[in-house]
Amino acid sequence: MNENIFKSICHFYGWKNAAYSSIHSGLINNTWKVNSDSQEFILQKINTNIFKRADFIDDNLKLLSNYFKTHHPEYLFTAPIENKNAETLCIVEDGHYRSFNFIKNSFTIDVVQTPDQAYEAAFQFGKFTALLNGLDANTLKITLPDFHNLSLRYQQFEAAILDGNAERIVETENDIAFILSQKNIVEKFEKFIHHAGAKQRVTHHDTKISNVLFDEKNKGLCVIDLDTIMPGYFLSDLGDMMRTYICPVSEEEADLSKVIVRKEFLKSIQDGYLKGMGDELSPYEKDNFFLSGEVLIYMQAIRFLADYINNDMYYGCKYPTHNLVRARNQIKLLQEYQSAIQ
Ligand code: GN1
Ligand code: MG
Image 1 (cartoon, rainbow, N blue to C red):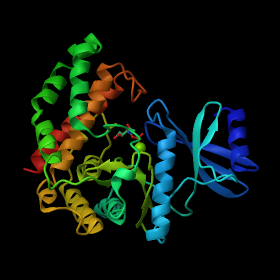
Image 2 (cartoon, helix red, strand yellow; image 1 turned 90 degrees about the vertical axis):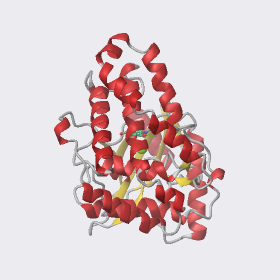
Image 3 (spheres, rainbow, N blue to C red; image 1 turned 45 degrees about the horizontal axis):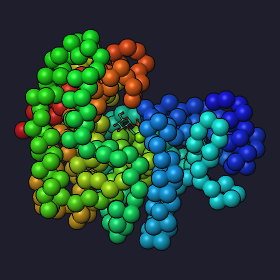
């Protein structure tokens, strides 16, 4: 980060003697840990190429924070901190920043190693939605329109294979054919969302394991990374947990023989999520429990492959075939998942 920018941020928050170090996590926003007069903070720059309305994120977090304060004051909600003018969004020359108190003795993990961790995380995400069941989800602002709209993602993919990088389209012929062959998942998704038994609730939309804080006893504390909280279906949160907890390696893994499904983790996610959600899910939603993983893994495969074909405009890449590796990883995971839930 540029020193003058950091100075402006310190001025905004009133931080003295502050130093920062980068935290490499997440594909979209930049994150740092800040030490100021022996207090610790998390600082984040919002990627406004993707989140066009940083103010919507800020409004949502205020709404949620107030709701929790009134209805569940014991819940640890990691709202952005205020400066002395009660502002939570710090706008400086190069963009929008916000900061959070660092929760002492908490930690995050990048890969789920034990079924207990999967249980704890699933419980936390279920509990988060359940605690907010008295809040009308439609009062939240839409920070990313159509974020988990699989039909739209599919259409964007169709556009990519028409107009994208021609060489890459040829190179990924087999991957494209596989994605097209699975279009029935889009149909199942459409049927689901139009059914009276499917409900929109306050949904996190990014339930990967690094978005859960754990305490020293390895118990889940709360969920973080709250920018994509919007009205949504349970498919999103449960499905992204399936996508990211059941496999011993992450979406970055290029060795596809390592992309397998650990069935005992499926069970832990199921138990933790249902415990956290209490009586929330309808019988129809429960009947579609495992559709969640199919929809989310498929959507992520589509997004990575479309991004590769579109010359890595969204996710960026650290090496030329990075998004192709990610897409193939997710395609393999989808195949493994489909066999596991048979
Ligand atoms: C992005 O930035 P990060 O890692 O929290 C993406 C998610 C994807 C994820 C894949 C706003 O999340 O939808 O599942 O990458 N977030 C956005 O790693 O596109
Ligand atoms: Mg995120």
